[in-house]
Every structure is written in structure tokens, then in C-alpha cells.
Image (tube, rainbow, N blue to C red):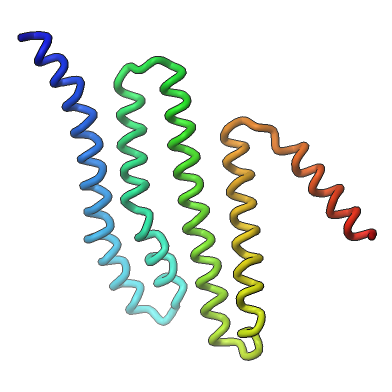
Length: 167
């Protein structure tokens, strides 16, 4: 009987944490982000609408990542599994933040396309440049968080850029 209750407790606690984090994310997406969207729609500034819409798509993912992180840290798993799981969750969160920032950047370009005349022809090029820059920075941050030295990569890119510039 004690063995069954111990197993149930070991399975029930992580499950409750994950379900709770999902419900928390759902609450934030449905209630808090909806409220923030209403507040943002009342302002003349359009960028707050863009930020709220971009963040809204990732709230549940971030809440689940937080719940999984708590589960991994509190369950007494072997140190290697805890470290790898934490790194994977960190990479997932960094990548999702990178996607959100990229979406915000491209939406800002889309907004300025309607405001500035003559920008419409260069919009797709500017969007692609923004995406490449943001995703490149995201990848560099991910590599740095994984303790992979990015200095040689940055040096090679600098030397390559200098060679192309001189050529």
C-alpha cells in the first residue's frame, strides 16, 4: 500500500505541475493577453498591438516550459538528465523568443510599408533581412547558452565580411 501511494505521488506531482502550468498559460493567453490587447487597441501607437499579438502566440509554450523546468528540477533525477533537460528547455525558450522578436520586426516593416511611400517594393527584402539578423542572433545566443564558443565563428564571419568588402 505504501509503495502504491509513493508511486502515485511521484507521478501525480509532476503531472499536476505540468497541467497547472498549461492552465496558467491558457489563463494568460485567454484572459491576461486579451485584456492587454484591449488596452493596446485603445492607444494610437500600433506597435503595442504588434507586441501583444506576437507574445500571445507563445504564452502557453513558455508556461509549459516553466512547468517542465520545475518538474525536472524537483524530481531528483540524475544530474546529467537534469542538465540536458534544462539546456533543451532553455534552447526551446530562446528559439521561441527569437521567433516572437522576428515577428515583431517583420510587422513593424509591414506597418512602415503603409506609412512610407516607395517602401512597398523593398518590403520583402527588408523583412528577410530582419529575419536573417534576428535568427542569426538567436542562434548565437543558443550556442552561447550551450557553452559553445562563438568567438571563432564571429572572427570567421568578420574576416569573411572583410574579404568580401575588399573584393
